[in-house]
Length: 371
Image (tube, rainbow, N blue to C red; front, side, top):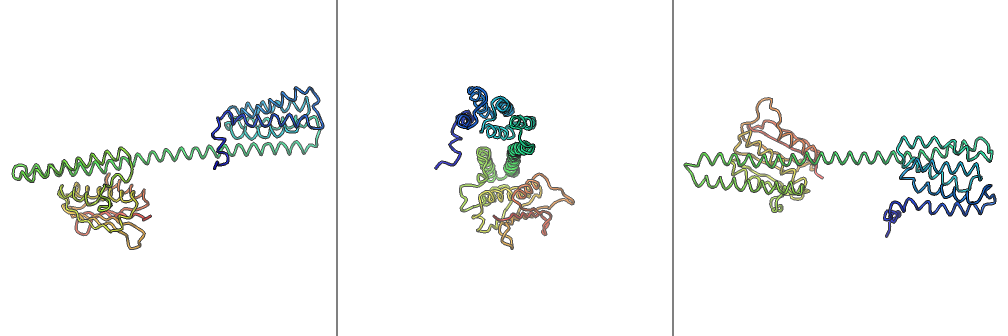
């Protein structure tokens, strides 16, 4: 089924512009010579002026001010030389609307100044009551204002779309930077800790050193694979893994990686986490990843507990990470990692709380509204 107006979008723009002229020109000629009052001048002049008036509409989008000025000149010439034609005001009314719709603001305002003298010239041969030309001028200006207002709304809508596009691009850049920071920071920190542990046991425990080196290699390969997915398609679900059914937020694999780096992670993940939208599960993964990386790097923690589940109100997803490290320094200030977690939670309409835990370590709680 063809949507009304869809067929015109399939035509070349020049054909669409020419269509009103092809329809109105024969109508003007037929009505002109079928009326009781014939032109006072030669018939060919009426035909030429009708052609000029119709042709002015064909240029209404390419040169709206010039088109309206040309059509208005033809209207004045016809009125003063041949008597006004019945359809001439209709064509000029369409032209004044197109002037307000397609012309630049300054040009549209300049063209509106032609309306009063053109209307007065049109009524000059008939000597009508003074109220009639004034009423017609008001009608013409109202039609011009309708076109001008529509053009202004289109410009504002276009500016809003451009602003929204720029904001989306900026937001995507921030998101990419946050994802890369979370991924690279976590992986590099884990590899550094593993490599440092391997250096200490290199001479005394070759088997343990081999395990740590294999863990470094595995962490590096995983980081490269995730970085390739992130930069290749930039989808939120790319931070999750193929075993999403068993590990919906990728936390078990994350805990295994951190265990190799010396951080024992206890997971308490509610079953309903697997039913959450992919982008929300990806955000949970990144929040926990950054929190555990901070615990390992800054808190020197050897153990941490991660709890993910619904709050008591049933409408909020709570993510809580508590480590057993040395805790924050007095009057600490959030670093880049905590700021990134805050930005991610804010993007989801949530909130973040962090500070010393009861056991002397560091506690992070993120609340996110459930969809």
